[in-house]
Length: 151
Image: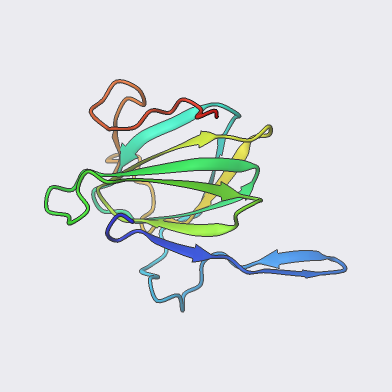
């Protein structure tokens, strides 16, 4: 696992009315602060990535469909520099994924319906000076191939 990445298995509490799933709590040991909450959607087969943040920590929860989230540790002084992690998250695997600053990440919709991720980052988006560094999803030095792995 990439240094600083945290996976929290989410608890689903069902009853006859439906269910409740807590995602992020202020008393989680890894909680830092609240920046904003937003929804991002990946259509089936579409890659959204790569990018990283210099300051922001992300907290991803896929709430509908299935999404493959891939992380790459580009941090020079990290003990896991060069490591790649792959997470399949969503309806079939309810987890919260904590992505630290400078860890490159992207996502791909892997189900038959759009994959929806709620993110609760530590920082509010700054429209004048965004904390977002983008990398081409296919033309880069990241040792990862987004193609589907059949077999």
